[in-house]
Image (cartoon, rainbow, N blue to C red; front, top):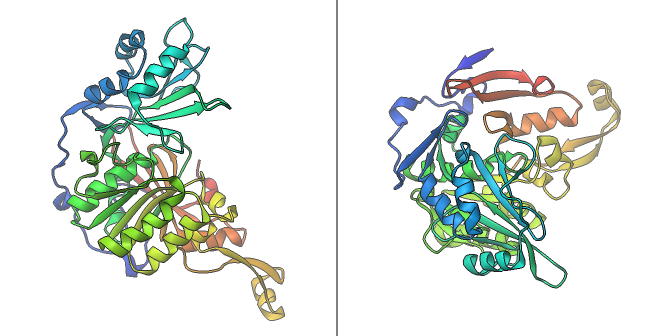
Length: 385
């Protein structure tokens, strides 16, 4: 069954269904930014794109500025790559391959200039540009010298929230997974804004690499009224998560790139206190999280169970089976297969079905050519693209 709508709840259990009216809930955006561009391909508004792009250009070699600004698909620019001894390249959303920006190689002097313009890199070899959402990542030689830079374009984008707006009203935790570049951090940013300003929640963003709230001490306007806690070192993220709960009384915690066992345990501790969690994790599909011993606790963990003869016969299975160990930390898990094609799992049901070798029912959310959210309810997981 296919439904064209802004949201759907009929596939949820009765305990989670709520009456709602999205038109009444839709408030004017409060971003203190000027809307500069709208891409018919992305179905999203890009705010203050030209001014933010100029800030990124300031760290690049001057002869690349006009080349990048003259590109017709400038609004789709994903990153600029500078590698010592190679031609500088630009990469664009939805395009494969490399786009060379000039026919001369990147020099040591150009990399040194960029390093000075950016400032100090963290221990994770990442840095930002104050007041923007851009991220600059360094590749170093064995001697510690920078030999390559990946300048990732960060944009304040609105419009993605329509894909998940209805789920936010249930007050449940949501985990996003997907390949790099699919837009997970962009969604986190917009969810922070909507929950803080439209739902009037006390939201704290744990921002390890300053990707959600941007670089600098004042968070970017794209996160709305959400508060932001910066993390001094990536390895300290789990401690800052617990600190946020103990010191600042949040109703919602947003955390990007959950990747360690300590962070997974911190998520469970936070969820057990009744706080809503919105996060992203390393992995493309639910199966990746199930098979990852470090992150499987996010979906309840798995354990080997020995069944009795009667139970094994009733289930028509072997006596030794793999089962979910505990309730999942995240009630919903969303696979972002593409920017506008998402699969939504009820985590407990999907995990149980997959562990039994069966295909769970999922909800497919996508945007059509008119940028309306189209929802396909109760679709077999193995039939999805």
